[in-house]
Image (tube, rainbow, N blue to C red; front, side, top):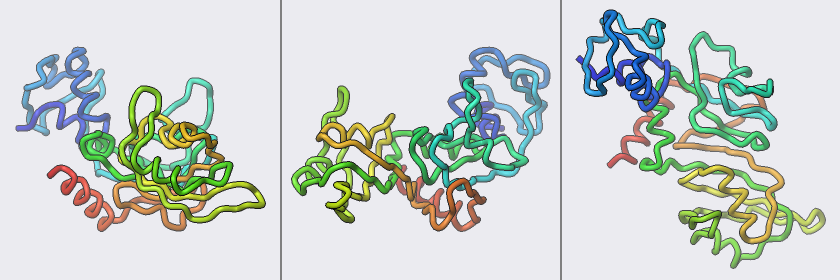
Amino acid sequence: MERLQKIIAGSGICSRRRAEELILEGKVAVNGRIITELGFKADPEDEITVEGRPVRKEEKVVYLLNKPKNVISSVSDDKGRKTVVDLIDSPYRIFPIGRLDFDSSGLLLLSNDGELMQKIIHPKYEVEKTYEVTIDGLIRQDEIEQLCKGVIVDDYITSPAQVKLIRKNENRYTSFLEVTIHEGKNREIRKMFESIGYTVIKLHRISEAGIELGNLKSGEYRLLKPYEIKKLKQYLNNADR
């Protein structure tokens, strides 16, 4: 017997948190009976439905996508813009794990494993994300050190980041850096640089939770290999200690 929300999340329909919300909203039934208790346990072989749709176990998969710019990190978009799910031909109902801004590119993971998704996006795991960042202007070393220590963004101070200058282009008046963060709040890296007077021209994610983008071209995707799934889960287990 398992908690009902765990069974639902394990089916790939949604995250465990969303499953709990659906239970509280009275949208989940077990063997025809509406369940509204979060502590309710069921047998995975029971007839479980969510909003009338049967819950079935399916193979857990994780896709690695090189998201192009101007694509929404969502399942659908009310403005009719292309989404990351539109780019992947999959027999599974997958969801993006976290997000990349509309005008950012690079590594994005998508999955039908609700429990894994929840761990990757939960702040307590402090999942590392590394980006290639191009800014306008020639950044100084003291400003890099300031970013590393944390800067004021909106109403909070960012957590310490790893910021490495790769090169400066004096002709184009730009700087190219590699930035690793553990928070990933909305447009955080762009705001970090704005706080010290720079505008981000290009933002491209190259790794997350130990998974590397590699040589995937823009718009290309692939399934994570078994050893990569194992590596990802080990990373999260270590972060949970």
